[in-house]
Amino acid sequence: MAGSSGRDVPPGRVPPSDRGSTAIADRVVAKIAARAAREALPGVPEDGAPPHAMVVVHHDTARVRVSLELEYPSDIGALCGAVRRHVIERVKALAGMEVPEVAVHVERLHSALSRGAAQGRIR
Image (cartoon, rainbow, N blue to C red; front, side, top):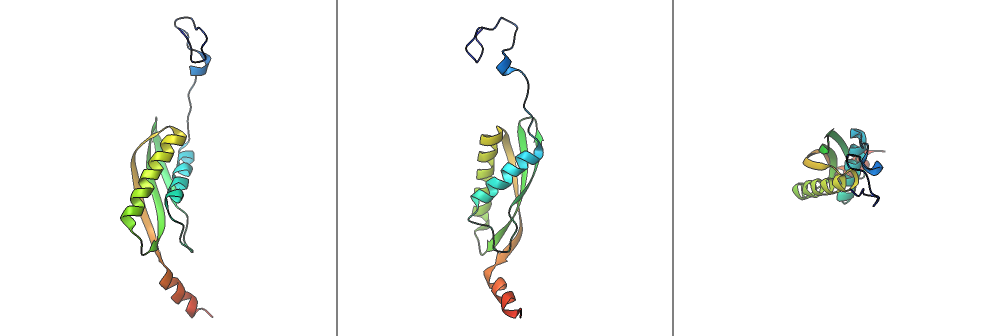
């Protein structure tokens, strides 16, 4: 039997490169997901918070919840769809995990008009 290194390995033996396991912490996958959500958006609103993610990992599967803030007006459905697709793609590429679910929660809408009105009242 040839191992992945190309060397012959006796039957019943596992080649050294195939031994062990890899565990990726939920918080690491959450950081990947939050970064991916930020990459999928045109920008973070001027006074808004960057996207935040919470993740539950079970074996090679990650369930993701992303919270974000958007500018008003925005095509919320299109932006949330872009975030979902990009999070799935990046988590799979970087962590090797399947992502069957990405729940996107829009926390707040930021309006340039309300920011301008509020700035006009401050003295």
